[in-house]
Length: 67
Image (tube, rainbow, N blue to C red; front, side):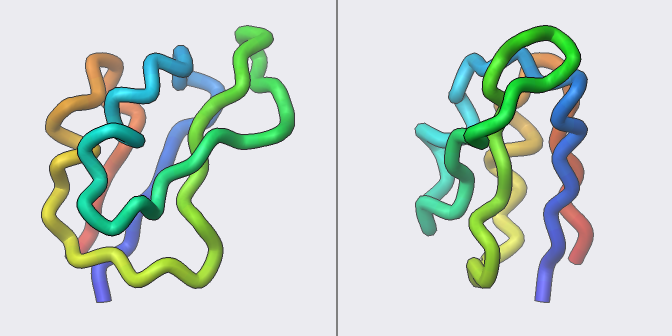
């Protein structure tokens, strides 16, 4: 199963990854990051298909997808 890692402190909260995830597995975190922004997180227990669209669209390269 694919695995996603998100660098929450690098995230600027643009939410582009949220908009492209076909499984709707990326959501906004409740806590603030070091920038004072609510970053995104991977939904616990979500079944990622490994399309890597989130990693491709992220302008700050905060997301990595491992297959």
